[in-house]
Length: 446
Ligand code: XLS
Ligand code: CA
Ligand code: CA
Image (cartoon, helix red, strand yellow):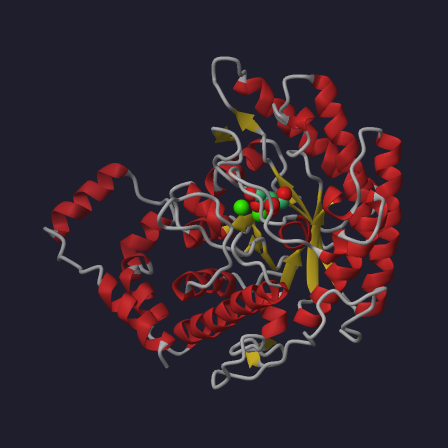
């Protein structure tokens, strides 16, 4: 992370590289917990957390909502007279921001970085041009690409889905974009490639053949996987579950649903999951639940770090600031031995009312600090506190003897019945939930 400002002009004047100042500091533009080189266990914070910033919310979204236009005027949109010129300015702003913030990774959709076009040749040409610039900037700053993806949900042609569209012409059109986005990801050394099935679902069952759409979806993903491998993509493919919004129902509903779909279609070796906090809560789970289920299958690949809003349940994509969430998430990540080659991508946006240039920095600083503190607390809970011992004791009856035989599938129902008779009424065992809740608070406040 050498030069904080590399473009034609500076877009965030007055803001330098964000320093670590520790918890005594009240400087909003300094880290209080995230100290990139600090060791937690055998890895540094930077190695554990693998932070990424995203292109779409921070550089493309000016704060529009269904009731009004954007509230922020972006300086990178003001100078150039062509879409390509504005994209070139935007890439300067993006890399200036990434490097000043000190995140090692970024993520983008094809048309965040490069102007879209209905003509496929023009779209591909634009993307190649922008990817060449991104490559130069990656080389001069040391920034890396956590994942690339294609936006198959914004253009009106995708209103009925992309890979699951009832019209084959749209499926093929979507494939053209995935092909280009995979090539871009390979060219930029992307470590993962994400599929978020934004409109892969339905608005109404009346007109939808779900069996056919799901079969087509599997063929679409298989073709994408094979093409990526054929051009040298060695990273993980990631499906990002979300239960609804924009559709009434989305096929990639939650971790369990996606794991089942991948296994059913022979895709589970190449694909893992990218879990977004706000999508997990939309599906009626907690963030930690969806992380844990993916991890149980060895398929927790990466995380989109954000949070929803308890008052309305929408996909509000707020920056993560809830320490209970980050502790819970990092417990899952640490138990599975880390996230690499995935990372923690801030798929989060500042509020529509947050209109100053420094708000984008403040929001990311808060998210990074929240996960850094979550990491430290989770590490202590797992390695210092009695948490793991208590949890193991709860299941100790399966560690030896007949309980072990049962867990290994060696006991039939009749022998279980005879054992029940011999042992008599089981002794009541408290779940002791409050003891764990108190332990989290105790370590959070240390
Ligand atoms: C939208 C999704 C999207 C994916 C990438 O809700 O979170 O941004 O992460 O297409
Ligand atoms: Ca996301
Ligand atoms: Ca979201």
